[in-house]
Image 1 (cartoon, helix red, strand yellow):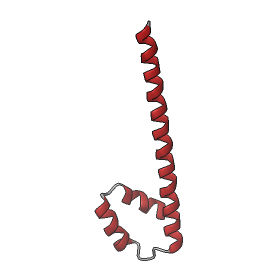
Image 2 (tube, one colour):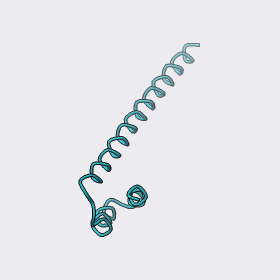
Image 3 (cartoon, rainbow, N blue to C red):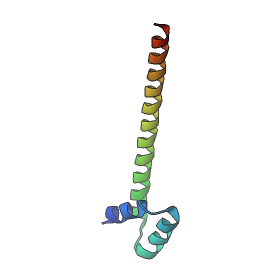
Image 4 (cartoon, helix red, strand yellow):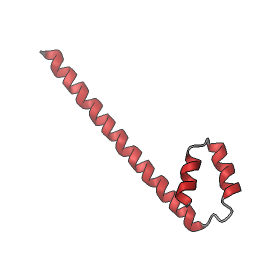
Length: 71
């Protein structure tokens, strides 16, 4: 259930998220906080991997353009 609620919050603006956390989750616990922190850390790791992949692709494209420019 917390995941569905969290996903609903994720679609809202940050200000609305803070209000919803206070109003709808009165039983917010240390355990649920740890779960959310873990999810956040996982998302950050995924974003960093995506950024690295984008940089790799951009570098490969530059290398291809350089090679084509020499032909």
